[in-house]
Length: 630
Ligand code: AGP
Image (cartoon, rainbow, N blue to C red; front, side):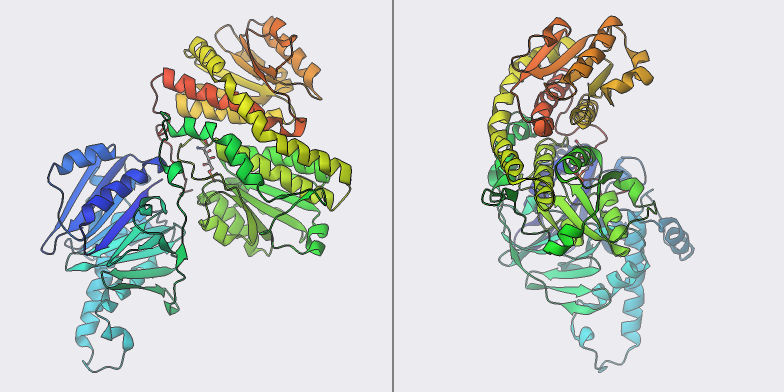
């Protein structure tokens, strides 16, 4: 979703701001803007559309100045039009703000500020923050003037204190979530950052500081970073920075060294990030398993769960929660954990779990599953269950993300940055981690040593099988060519392949804008079969396994009604071709790992269809990579 960059230092701000905004493009946005203070004035430039349009608007002459803010906006309050693009000004233009998140009490604050004479020109909640900080600044300046000059107040010795207090005053009045970068017209050497529920990272350079909503804009600039925590406000000048907690005063920041995966941030010869990430899956699966398979005890090893053996043995129920693709991985996890560990599992949409009040006993473990670690609903669901005293864990890709920090422990995917908006390698890594967790829990219960060894062997074979599965690309492209004009597509599978069907349908709809639905194949007869006609293809997942014959019968039912059939089948299965119009063959894998292999042709099918329809594969319309609002 929205992205933030900021710069203060001895260099020029504009290059970092524009490069940084490009690095944040993957998050999804509809407009962008920058503001730069050149020491005598602030120049703001905004535009609807891509960063290229913003740079065209700026013109050939770079904007001069050593202090600046930049933003990519994904519209929440107010249409995606130029006037609503950030940065926004407060007061008479003395405050400039960019904001990620949503302010829930914005209308009450707006009415109050309007009564005080502040004039609003946008429909955004962010303009409220800008005016609120201007109001805070006015109050602080008035109170500073009325104080005796020799008052023994350490803060007042700091010339930045008045600005810090103004931001703190405003932050105390905000309800909702915010990551804020703020600058003041009259302070061309001061950048402020404030966070609650929306991430911000400070990059420490030599005589310069960078600010961003994630680490990607900081690659090539610095590897020394500070993650701001909730309720923290940072002041940055070319000479140094300090971090203050809203209620606890100055805090000592922990400086971390980040390792960028440069290769993951470039296309490496691929046309799109989505395709590159599809092809990275053999490697991302190896990374998910690296150091986690324990042959000696036929189990898995997880360093970060922070569970004692007693706590582990005591777990009698698991809740898996997430959104979108991560929720589909949770469904796969339900089958895995119930089958291998015999622990009852429930899967909840995080957006529902956060407002439900389910009875949860103390021995229930709650896992939040997320690629980005920033999904607002997943974060809120975990916080809510944690507030009730539940042990919450994260299965997460982005190190240091809000969900990774909020959970009591967890497992990283180590899939590397996922830039394409359509999640691909994160899904297969999530399924792989859930399979290892199922093994881990299973081995503390009934799962035998031999059965554990077999699971490990099957897991080890996975990267090679996914590599083989990728060779279906050319065949999938032919199929895509044939069906690219469809307006509705059904995806059908059973057991482990039911969540895979949901995931295939999600991939197709999000990047090609074709309506697609996933169902358990046998559910067809209870309604969806009414949709079947000669123009509605059905994608059947029918690899060999427990329900193979049942799915073959379901295929016959669709065929009998004239529906075209695309089948994803085992490599040496001649029977499927007798029913299906088009068959894509896959290598055989253990049934519990089928989603990881079967999803490959579905990812490629969505990719090729979208491409053939002229869609922007990596930046589909209306979507954002990390959904940081409810
Ligand atoms: C999938 O392709 C998505 N774009 C989306 O559904 C995503 O999986 C969802 O928003 C959850 O994101 P997360 O894994 O970062 O929490």
